[in-house]
Length: 313
Ligand SMILES: [Zn+2]
Image (cartoon, rainbow, N blue to C red; front, side):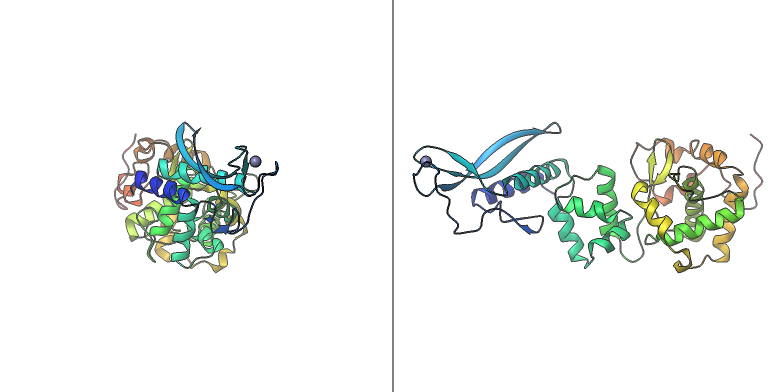
């Protein structure tokens, strides 16, 4: 995407007076044909576009802002929804400049796929409130942007970050319930942010991909400071807790075997947590980047050949 060209587009749109027309899908700005009179009695004011350069998050951004100006006394008056317009413009111009999707782009891509905000949230594993905010001017983090792109890229079979599946949060819950049985530990406890639970899930997903060609859950994992974690886990936790695991596709015998093997390899939550921190496929990633399922072949803390006995450390 050519950011410079797109920025020019925004600017020239602004000069044509289109800035206030449509932002984030809402009609904002002054209605056409509406007149504004100078409060000093000089008659109709002229709508004009000012270019302002501001610094936002270390980036210099040029914004085209509409104002009414009196040609006689030079009084400038902002348009009614100017504050919203400016906020959205800063956000969008910033997002274009640093290579994040703008609110408009997110909305357009979502609509191309015929997804409601709710469906989009589910597909990307992100809270619906976040989708709404980003479409309306809030700036997503880089990892959230990656998750959005991955979700937009998804065809029915998923992609390399989703292990050839489409995300199923009921299935995440189902796998965790299976781990509960296999390990005797409690999963998805209140107030716990999945820090440890997810490590079991990650190994099972990776192993399923390695052996069966598909992960178990369609989850996307990011390399975070505390190990591999569900990308967007903060949004996902409550969704998973609220899900009905009986609605998930049941686990196949092969999938259950994989879960059982992970459970037998790591007896405690602490041990699975520690093991993930010894995995190069986590260690060598920069924080926030996604871990592709193809990295499963490089796991070191769990045997990948079922019949090979592990050599003592
Ligand atoms: Zn005036």
